[in-house]
Length: 317
Image (cartoon, rainbow, N blue to C red):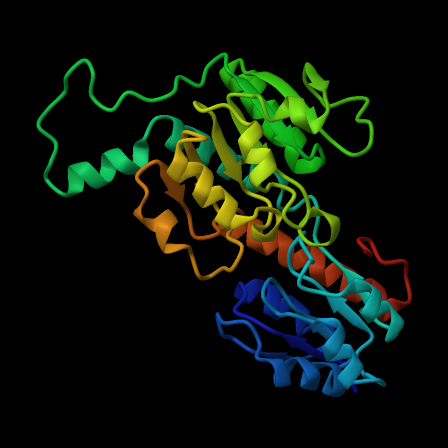
């Protein structure tokens, strides 16, 4: 009998079809995260689980299922801060993710947010759709000219380097970055600096993993360090930013604007952010392209197949 696999959310059908070649698949074809009791059922009733963002396998879930049937959580996505990895390991489960598949798509969204926020694209479109545009004039909606400006990147992993490459080669931006460990080859001319110095850039992008010591990495002290004309961009995870501190910095004019694809309490978005014209808000579109989601699914399945075959896991965390 084929081992039982739970796919927790809606998924490209090609991924589900491939999974069915090796597993007895139960597909929870829903967009909302699993409720708490379903998380526990997943551990009790299935040999493997393919979860994703929002399916919160916290320590309390594993504590309630001390002898789980499941042996692997093959996460669909590079970020896995919704899984308590030490608790999973203690319960005997492997945890994997899908790095690499998301790199270019997420970097593209970072550049989208930089350009939209700097050039006030969202604000301009809203004005036009309201019928308030009266025609071109020389001082209409003046924004930040991105070409040649300094870009500060916090987190120089795969995604950070991809952002740097696009910004440097496409827009001639000067790249500075902060990373906890040395990065000998960032891929483009760039300087590794302390965080306080990176925060002085014209545009600051954060691209670190969520959870753990990165929670609220950007708080009131960090926003106070930024320049009044600077823009802040988050394509990482919502919890790396103290959202109330970001709102305060924007309301006080401490920073000029922000572009966000992720939120501290998503899918809830701060009403204050929703009211601000100098903030670009996207609904977590970082990897929202069919070919990218299919590639993520294939990577998750490769981890599952390796587990099934007793091979080393390609992307263990």
